[in-house]
Length: 243
Image (tube, one colour):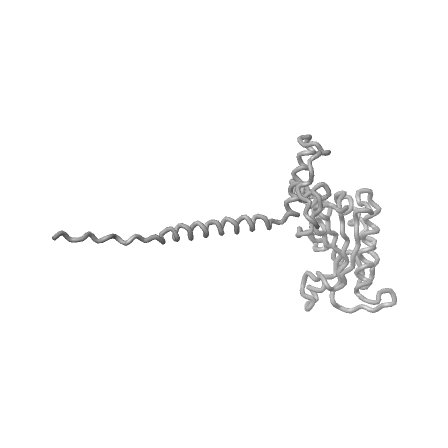
């Protein structure tokens, strides 16, 4: 007798594996679409405005384009009203190095004696006028022999933004003229600014004055040497200018 052939068992559910893979890929696709749709539209508008302005200045795009704004989403400023991204001039660093060199030549003796210090910081070039060379203790009047030094410094300053900052040590002062270190530091800064404004290259529209008392020290007030360094007036030459 011949043996009966066994029928192979057919799995009719194999399609579920492919279907599950398809659903997974479809879900991942929609997740990517959703993430892309959440991009910062305001930044996109700013970038588009900057690019458009750059090409318009070169005559490549018509400034009076008839195209609609890139986005009209609520709360998003139209691209035409967005300020261009600030791009610092490439030669700003070279210009600041040139200013530093001119100042070093104008006050070579005073820098060597420690009467003046020059250093670069994140806000620009800082010229520190130490109290010992410019003021008597507790006074906001510049010494007569320091006027010529200020004249040389002013002549070497560029026509850019300038901040005059007064600083003191932490020793309290209470006189008939100055009730605290706030008044003394502000008065010294104002006196220096007034003398600098006598020069044509120092514009009153580009200069500001501030008094910080003892709250912006550069040295330890626990020692006489540290307190001497803190008693100063800083001239901060702003690298980006002042509007």
